[in-house]
Image 1 (cartoon, one colour):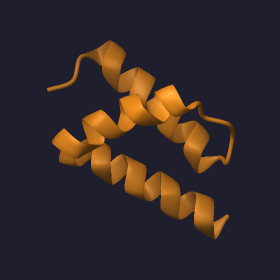
Image 2: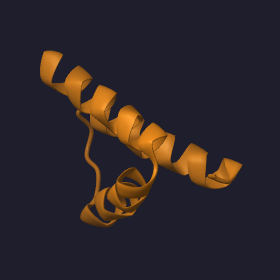
Image 3: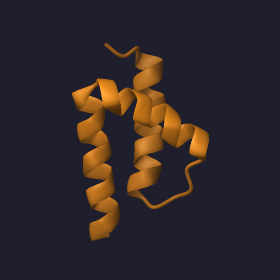
Length: 55
């Protein structure tokens, strides 16, 4: 289970990925750690990457 603070931080990073804005390596690593363990986060990330590719 994610805390509200963690969820908001992850969603902010994911939003930037989806909008093709810069995301630091540290933020990507932080996000991937959660995506590997939480299917909801993995789904958010998958949708953001699809949105980024579709435009």
